[in-house]
Amino acid sequence: MPFQKRNKLGAKKFLPKPLDKQPICFKGYEGQKAQLKTVPNWQERLREYVEQLIAECE
Image (cartoon, rainbow, N blue to C red):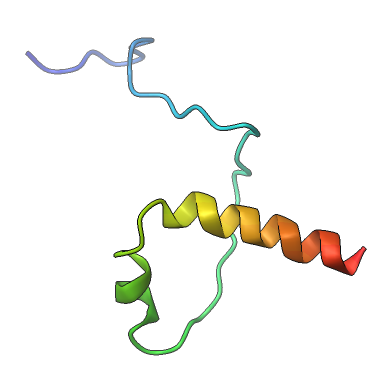
């Protein structure tokens, strides 16, 4: 049975803050993308690191 459109029971992320609609993009060195994807919970850890960098500049 396929998922119905506009289903309110779909998968939802439980994040402490809402995500921005525009992604943050940067070019890494060769091979970093594949290595990064092997790190557990890399997206949340990267978000926390960006917050730390911003706090250091203020």
